[in-house]
Length: 391
Ligand code: NZQ
Ligand code: ZN
Image (cartoon, rainbow, N blue to C red):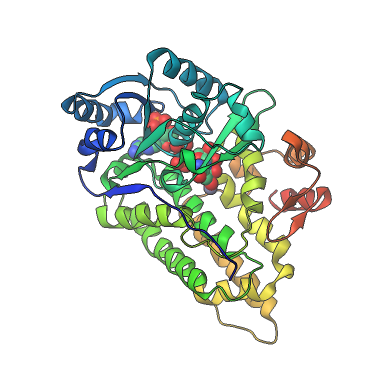
């Protein structure tokens, strides 16, 4: 196991009706003028936004609002939010929505007290200072409610890139599983896929002797395999939604990623798909992961074979561990298809002729120098072959 520091100071408030305490938590974490940031309307339609406003008013906290965050959030609205925060002297940003709303809120929080262009943070500069952010989560997926990360797409060139820093970790995150019951099945499934991806990206490690985190990841993946189909067939199942929601947070606050190298090749390869085709990030991952795993399997067959046995219940073939490894990847792919995720470029809405463009932006956009590195290092030929496996 590698040396590590684990710092995860977000206050998680979990359970039914917890959003009615939003005002109390804003107050507790020092907010006096709030920007409520939300998405395309689901929070308005469900009445959630009204409950949040009522809760802030009850604590006599002033607020202004900015809606319209799109999935795969864009830089344009971030600039608008930064201007609004400066004009209105906002000191706290309350994200009401999913990963896209939370990431847009984090970008605004970083940009509002920075003299330069906020995009500097998405070009490699670490976020050291930001306005405080709190969240009311409405979809279990990205894990942004407990992460120090934010992913934004710059309209110019459709560059989708991430920023990081403890300053943008949410001060608190309110998690009411019942709020996720209004999700369309496809979004629920995309969220399940993203959560499983965050676990797999950590499982694929080059660090030896990481039994604790291996077992945590396996436990969370087994939970997703149990609860995923339950919630797809019974969307109002609160208990299944609750388990998925907490698994989503645990999958990405790095409690099961400490002390080990991690992969993230699938995420990097996927981000080009959701940037170009505006598909759901989880749906893009469903097509990407089996291709990346098949392509990189030979780097450490035993790791994939271990996943196959411990997670997917495959029989270990000691003479041919690659057969076991492949069976595990196939079982994962079939699981994703069974919950309604796309299996190839066509179902995702991607085009084979775009592959050179996807590879170019992936490997050269925003200062990258021709490779991406995770579990293995991938160059232009590797990435081209991986995208071709998805066709
Ligand atoms: O905009 P509204 O109307 O709210 O609709 C949203 C949106 O269309 C809808 N939705 C959310 N909650 C709902 C609901 N509809 C009905 N009822 C509800 N309760 O769902 C759609 C998707 O929302 P979005 O926020 O985009 O989903 P998600 O949480 O999957 O976030 C995806 C974004 O997060 C990034 C992804 O790249 C993508 O841009 N990621 C962020 C990470 C991080 N910050 O740590 C890590 C992840 O790996 C990921 O890259
Ligand atoms: Zn993800």
